[in-house]
Amino acid sequence: MAELKSLSGDAFLALSHGYAAAAASLALGAVQGSEAGRGYSAPDLGGELPAAPAPGTPAAAAESSGEQSGDEDDAFEQRRRRRGPGVPADGRRRPREQRSLRLSINARERRRMHDLNDALDGLRAVIPYAHSPSVRKLSKIATLLLAKNYILMQAQALDEMRRLVAYLNQGQGLAAPVAAAPLAPFSQATAYPFSAGAALPCADKCAVFPGTPSALCKHCDEKL
DNA sequence: TAGGCCATCTGGTCCT
DNA sequence: AGGACCAGATGGCCTA
Image (cartoon, rainbow, N blue to C red; front, side, top):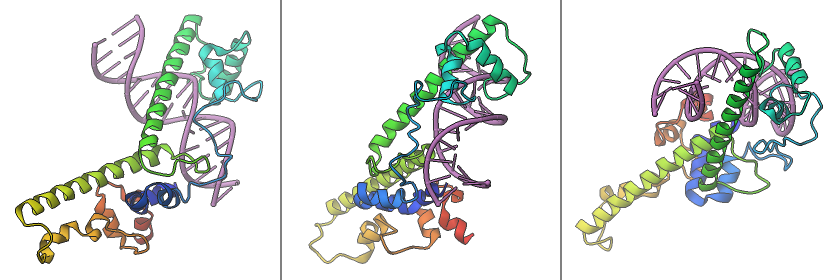
């Protein structure tokens, strides 16, 4: 969860400044790991899995979804006895039609979750962070939080751009001496409130993205 | 070893 | 009735 805590503030600073590389180091500092990452996105149903996979494993899923062979009933019974995932809470044996219905429901649910993961992958592809084989994929929650902050940042930038255009339209451009007040909103400090190296108080960082749960901000955790 | 993240199964609820 | 969605439970894998 450590990486999540760093996403709300610092991570997005990196995004706003240089995207990929800096974002990778800041947003994913805790996420970066060995290249032998988990690779959870594509469960290998045909991999080197134990003959009697534990419930919850991809192999177990394959077995349960009807991709198994003749020993499916044995496996199902085994799973039922173990009372793991895939085993009815009451532990009763199902009639065959109920079981096949369950299998189709399971398969549908699996497909739905795969679609959800595909969409998440699509989101990862468009939010700015280091897309590199050496950088572990963003977790689901990190992806969502980063995307949310990215949207907020873009909205803020757009708003400031509009105000800048309005200011230029009503004034005569920036050639004339500019009062501090009108330009203040367009200052670097406003656009990127927590610049690299200049650590702002946590309250300032959190204020930039009000929706960010404080529970996910390590700075808040440290100071509260 | 604990904690984080994940896939999967399951039963419940809601909608068409 | 069937499908979509959701949340809880469970166990596996990986990292610190």
